[in-house]
Image: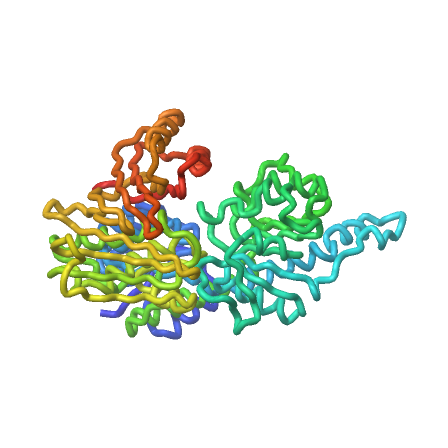
Length: 543
């Protein structure tokens, strides 16, 4: 029976032509409701969507022969990835197709801002009584230092073109291992404030989330940590920059200018403070809005579908895809354990990652080391990357960033432990090392048994706060009081002690809470005497 493709959103004609040339059958059915799509999708081997067609779990409840969903574009928030994965449906996107257009837009913003082109255009087109050239005098970019935050595909594309423009380029990407990038041409920094202090221009190409929220904030703008001639370019995510602090800094001439393509809320409110300033360039999220990019995402989606249906080749995978995740009931919980260990390691690891090592012992865990290592690595890397990372592409993503993935079969469990033990160790670029050991008991629930040298037994789930403190009187009581004052209920807590090599004693508190602790509480905990490190992590709740 011929393979059939359902095109549920408008695609560029070039993409449709690729489908025709392949000889595969396809139907265009634009504007289907969720109910209509659910009724149709099981009749097709592949589905192609853009942003209008929605693919929630309801659409995939009875997927029939559907094997792959292609998103012509980057974002897959309109597709229920968990539902697709549970049904064995591969989800792909075409993130690479818009790389050049997005990078060019960032450079266009940089040029427009540096040379005051929008303001100059407005001056001339208004029919000026005076020809005020001096008023629109700009700055030359050659010789200036460009700081690129995030060295994924887009960041590296911007950097390579800036180098050709004779700019000095430096980079900040804690999850890019090594001292430099682009064959040594881009020096990498590990400390953001040290990096920021060098920048004449800074451009962002990072994902949203806790790790990148407000990298440009009030403290940095008003605390003497930036050059007064700094130009800020944000073509990534709105939350990367504190828009209101940025507006104040521009108004008070703490920095020279800003060019913004993305906002926390789109469209922004009509009274947004950036609208009233003359040293800004603003665009309505145009990074990938070019004829070429829109054509490319359609063509890439269609050719990726064809490649998968004809030969099984996977391009741009977003979910688990062909990785076997349907393990027997007694082994399946090991996957959840590996994922939770990876998430929890983000609560103890700081800085970039150089190596991720999984060790497995027992009768079941060693059979699935590749899958377990990939699952843990995905959770370690996911919060820090703009590009989608999953069990299919995580090895490639790690290799691009010089991150080594290692798996070791241990013939015997670590001393003092028995059964199937899964251990994951992460080594940072600075050489700092952290390890978490865990297992799954007969009840099917994952357990954390050790974090570094701290012994414990806890089910890692829900909202958790990891607190490393000096082992001294009063610290535990202070922590409890601070949670109480913040109206955050502690649902469970494990405390473990360890004497360090230098003779000092530390304790680790692994705390479960009934609600999100919030940034203010985390900041107060970090500032409390005796506290060494605090990290809030969100893990899946118990099924």
